[in-house]
Image (cartoon, rainbow, N blue to C red; front, top):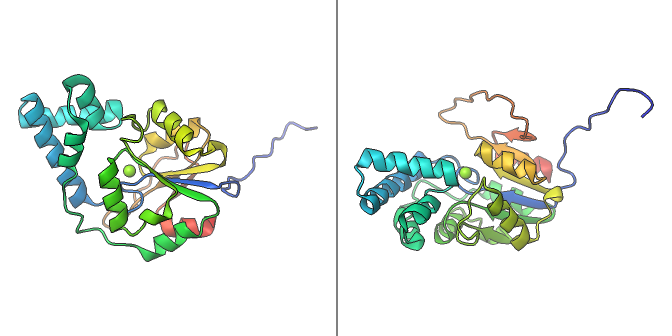
Length: 228
Ligand SMILES: [Mg+2]
C-alpha cells in the first residue's frame, strides 16, 4: 500500500463451507427446565460418588465444568468415575419442553457445504436431543464428548480432535456457540465465530463486544437464512 491507511474488510461468512454448531442452548432456546434437571442429577451423582454434602458436591461439579469444560472429565481424572455410567444417569431427563423448529431445519439444510455438531454432551444424549429437534439427519457428523475421547471445549485437544476426525478446515469454517469461552478457542484455531444468544423473558441484555466474536445473533434461524 502506498499510504498508511489500511482497509479493514467487512467480516463475511461467504468463504464458509463447514458449519459447526454447538448443541445445548445453541440449536434450541435456553431451556431452564432441561438444564436444571441435568444439573440436579449431576449433583446427586457427584454427592454419591464423593460422599460430599450436597452443597460441596455442587461446588465441585461447577469447578470441574470450569476447569475441564465438562464435569465428567474431572470426575474421571480425580475420582475414577465410570464416564458412561455418569452420562447415562445425568442425561436421563425428559425433553418435553423442546419442540422441532421447521424454520431452523430449513435454514441449516440450505447452507452451502457441510454441517456438524460439536458438543460437550454425551453421544446418546446428543442423538436423542437432535432427534427431538428433528435435526439429526442434517449433520455430516455429531462430534460428542465420547467421540472426543473426553476432551471438552474450550480445550485445545477437543478442537484438534474435532478437526482431525471430521476433516473440517477451520479457515473455511464457522462455529456457532452460546458459550463465549468456546468461541475464544475456536477463533484461535481459525474459525469464524458466531455468538448465539437467546432472549430470556424478552430481556435483550446488551453484552460487551468480545474481540474474538465475529458475529452475534439473537435469531439463529434468520442469521442462517442471511448467510445462505
Ligand atoms: Mg451450549
